[in-house]
Amino acid sequence: MNKQRIAVDMDEVMADSIARFREWYGRDFQLELTLEALRGKNPHEAVAPEHQPALRAYPNAEGFFRDLPIIKDSQRVMKELAEKYEIFITTAAMEFPNSFLDKYQWLRQHFPFLPWRNFVFCGDKSIINADYLIDDNAYNFDGFRGVGLLFDAPHNAHETRYRRVCGWQEVATLLL
Amino acid sequence: MNKQRIAVDMDEVMADSIARFREWYGRDFQLELTLEALRGKNPHEAVAPEHQPALRAYPNAEGFFRDLPIIKDSQRVMKELAEKYEIFITTAAMEFPNSFLDKYQWLRQHFPFLPWRNFVFCGDKSIINADYLIDDNAYNFDGFRGVGLLFDAPHNAHETRYRRVCGWQEVATLLL
Image 1 (tube, rainbow over the protein chains, first blue to last red):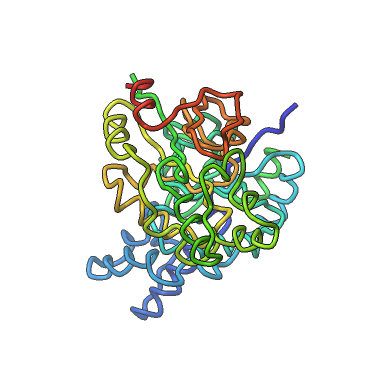
Image 2 (tube, rainbow over the protein chains, first blue to last red):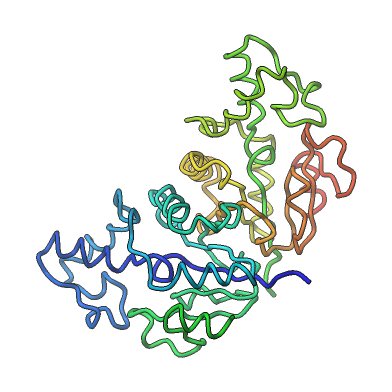
């Protein structure tokens, strides 16, 4: 029997891009972007109106996706999942064309057990054919043919329509 | 009712990468790579053994995918198809990470009517959820859940397992 297939989002699920927003916001404005301020909001919605254009531009800036911290337990649990399931990485990279190479290299460096043939850089994730999608953005479950698992993140705190998983240990408990 | 969805490969279907192989082979070895020699073969299989490493390396070289000629009728027919179907571009770009930006920019330039949200850079195309896949490589139909349409190219001359389409006008006749 074929293995079931899990599609996994990158940002806020494997790679901590919120850490980069907080780092650069501190660097540019000498202010702290707290996790409390980010609750239920995208980063640019959590700052003063005059700072919003800068935050909107961050993900397209050189180096934003480079050397991002790794989300806790993601390497260990995905390595275990890869024994039992087919794992694909499905990231909405098309929105930020300057991120392509950084994202590719980050995956090769930190998740060398995943084959590059299973990396997918896309936009609209309804094109993904998988049994599960682990993602922090609920809109990516629209039109998805499998089961959506909402990976807990500050911005999605108020989303209630999908099964929420709080961290990779909970993913392991659910799927292993 | 939702539109049916067509996934379309880039190389040898929208973009003429064989033209680039022939151009660079002539530049580097002062020899002609004829379409007859390419029949049933990949480019590196159609040349002398001592030239094969060079041809294998071409697709990873700077600029290989830049300014590729456009396959005849592809713009016109895809524009018509886009009225009736959802079109996604699904290219196995992961094999050539240096191609990402060139492929993205080529699509934006020559197919501006296609939304970037519908671009997919992948490896294994069994991840694609679509009703049709138009592709010149039959192995991309393995595990594909829809109907594979084999776009005629010199290298796939001997493939008989799939419905062959000889050019975009035939795609139009079939799907419009």
